[in-house]
Image (cartoon, rainbow, N blue to C red; front, side, top):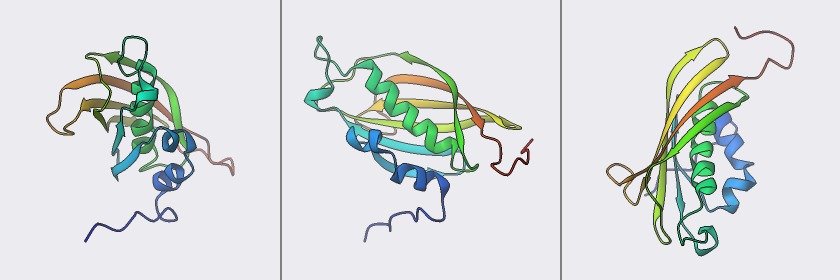
Length: 148
C-alpha cells in the first residue's frame, strides 16, 4: 500500500508545494521532504527541449530551485531564495526523468546554504546533470518578531 500523501496543514513545505502551479505545470513530483532536505522528480517532455534537442538549462535550474525551496521550508516557515548558482555538467535528454535532491549545508540566524544535485534516470546513482548552491533567507515574522 502506498504511503499516504503528506498533510499540507501540518507541514509548511507541503502546503507551499500544494500551491506551486509552476512546478505542477512542468510535471514535477514531490518524492520526499524532511527537515532540511527534499527530493523532486521531473520527466523531460518534448516541449522542454531546446534547439539542440536537449532539455533547456533553465528548466533544469527550475527543478533544482523547486527542490531547494522545499528543503528551505521544511524546517522554517516562509523562507525564500536569496540567490543561487548552478553548474550544468551534462545534457539531459527527451524521455529521461530528472531527480533533484536538496540538502541543507548550513543555517545561521535567518540565512541558510543548501546544495542540490540533479541526476538523470536513477535518483541515487544516475549521471549528475547539474549542481546548484542556494542561499536562503527566512522572512521576518509577520507579527514583527525577529527569528535571529
